[in-house]
Each structure stands twice: as structure tokens, then as C-alpha cells.
Length: 199
Image (cartoon, rainbow, N blue to C red; front, side):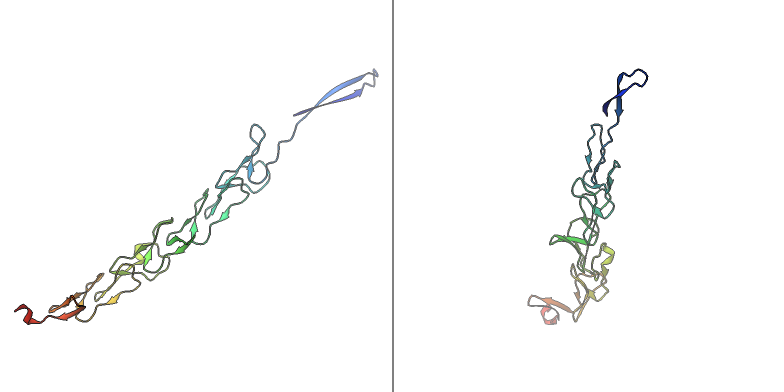
């Protein structure tokens, strides 16, 4: 508030008189990225995870889902990079389900693996006895059971058939030799047992 004094003559007496005029000082218009003014007349920076796009005294707004504000005083929030996400008011983004943080970016989980949570954790290999064909899988349901007569190791993208003279049940991590056959130290194949060995 300012006070302005002016002098005017009185037409009836010819005497000069002084009049005080009270003038209101307009409140400052806060720039984008700032809200207010506060009680002291200052504009306040929008906090991290918030923004304000226009001039004026409106409040700062939270960054929307899938955007982020890493700094204060922002006039706009940035979109999350591909493969990442955020909730409203976030200061950073996190890798989506089915994506893992690798080489400074969020990358899809490879076939044979999955990731059920948002974050930077590593992808989880499909268990032995199952296989995964999908990129970016985000739950264990994406790992399919091997059929009987097949097997798989952890992290497999397909099941392998049992070798000759061997069998397996469904969801097997390995095959067993048929009756009358066995594996030896020198061979991983199922070899016929020499009946003379047990005599």
C-alpha cells in the first residue's frame, strides 16, 4: 500500500489544501513454477514432483501418473521414459512390471523370465520344469509347464524331449531312465544295464 499526497486549491476560499490518496500496490503475479504470494509477498517455488504452468497465484499441481518432476520450480513435468512408470506427485520413474533396469534404461524381461513388481529388481527365471516364450512377462503364469516326456532347466524358453530310453512326468526338471537302463559316470545317456553286473 502506498500513500500519495496531492495539493489542490479551494475555489471558495482560494486557499491551498493537501489531500492524501491511499493507493493499493498490486500483489505480484507469480511466474510459472512458483505459487503465492505468501504473507510476506514472496512467490514460493513449486516443490519436487509438482508444477505450475501459468503466471498467477494458483496452487502448484502434482505431476500426473507416468510423469515426474525431479526438480523444484517446474512449469511442466516430464514424461517417464519407455518401459517405466510413476504415480502422481513422483520425483522419478520406476521400471514397469516385466521390465528391469539395465544399461541405464528399463528393458523388457527376456523370454524365460518375468518380473511381477514395479522397480529396478532383476527379472526372475521361470522355474525348472517350465518354459517362457514371452518378452516382458510380469507373472509366473507366463511360465508354462512342460508336458510328460519333456523337461526344462530354470530360465528355459522351450522344453526338451527326453533322450532315448528315458521318461518324465509333467513339469519335470529332468528325465529318468526307463526300467533296465541307467546313466553311467562316462555317459549321460540311459544305457541298458548288463544283467551280469548284478549277478
